[in-house]
Image (cartoon, rainbow, N blue to C red; front, side, top):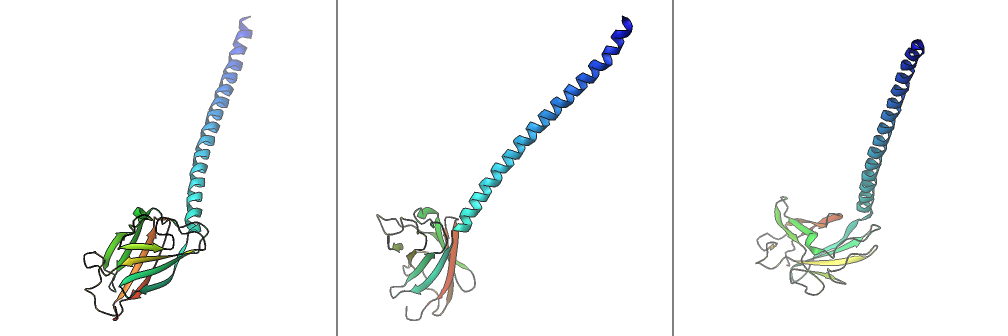
Length: 182
């Protein structure tokens, strides 16, 4: 009887080792599955954000300094997603002189209910997004001497650069010359 008991211990030890190996492999499998799904979710989120950003494209089709010394910019939406303009607190424009010195960096601050003399948009005002395949005329006042974007101190024929950033979704820019007639 004693001999048969000694033969049973190695069998139990092997069974226990196999069970621990299976349990460790199962735990590792579920851990890898969880990590993989978290990484996949992050990748999908990044991919969705990237495709949304790529889908938004703005193009400046016309820039003109008007007779009342306002900067008229016509922006076209050439992407396949609306360009955010409604949240004007996050839409900024930057004006640089010919030496790339920043003249002003300012938020677009107009809404549909109260257009300011500083910024306004036509048609539909600045309180709505720019739809796909549509244009919006944005007019910026650069003639008010109390405003930081005043260009009165610059000589005629000075080249200026501007950039419009639409809440980080897309941006566009261009250049214009301060006209001697203005």
